[in-house]
Image (cartoon, rainbow, N blue to C red; front, side, top):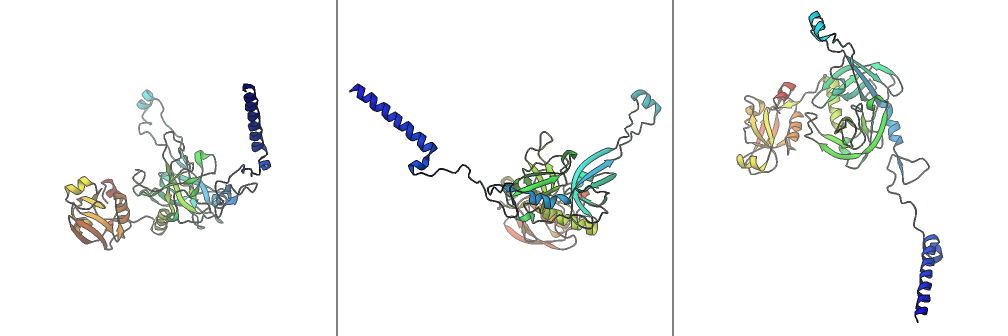
Length: 386
């Protein structure tokens, strides 16, 4: 009996091994279909091109890069070296040597051509305090640029170059962007030449980063490095969605967290600068804070949404309209405000000299207050007045 059981076990083992080999190598012998070796992860996006080789499961963004790249320029700046006031003193030179540094300070950045008339949009920090600004097109042409105007509060600047037949980028609707949308960052990182990197929209409406006064950033993981500032963030159609401005980095290079100013903001700033040479914003003279449960309890306020006013500038527009410390502003001209950045942005959008209605909650009473905004300027920003 033991011998028969051993023969049976060996026979079953051999049959199982044969079945395994057949099922793996020739599944059709058993009437089964083989599984596909490649499963497409995503379909081609509208406006994109199939990858080389025609693989329908891959996507090429070459059409977007080809459409937008000609309108993205490199910007070289130079600034005269500062002179030491004691460099001409022979005793100073005797003890400390000749410390004169005649080498000019140089900088690199990028920009975007937005008009056939030669208007170029870039970051203010790219051209700030520069004595000479040279714009280099992707086709090799170069031109000196004139500064039309700057807006330090959004870190934007408008230049003008005197060339003809300029490529112009198409402005997109940045308000239609959604998290996960693919984007390209185009610029001149580290001065190596025009470079295109890809990624997605990681977040929208980033504020309170301490970069600009007015913040509403698009966050992306497309690689952005020094020299990309002022360059283009475009969608899969090559339409401008934002101006690359800053990165979060511990090493100085890209860590996958980059920020771009939305086209909606850039468009309004550029139009104001081209028209008036500056951006004019509203100001009402209050000291706001985000409404917290502690502040609400301290001032006897029964709401949890809005911006509480902790200080009012004497004889300022808000004081003249009757706004008091402890008031909670919930809407500005019908636009709901939930935090200080939203209030700052809403007030800044008010035309100076034109009355605007604020929805105010004073303890349990709801009020409609008519305020006539003044003109905001950088001196007031220094004392944190909105």
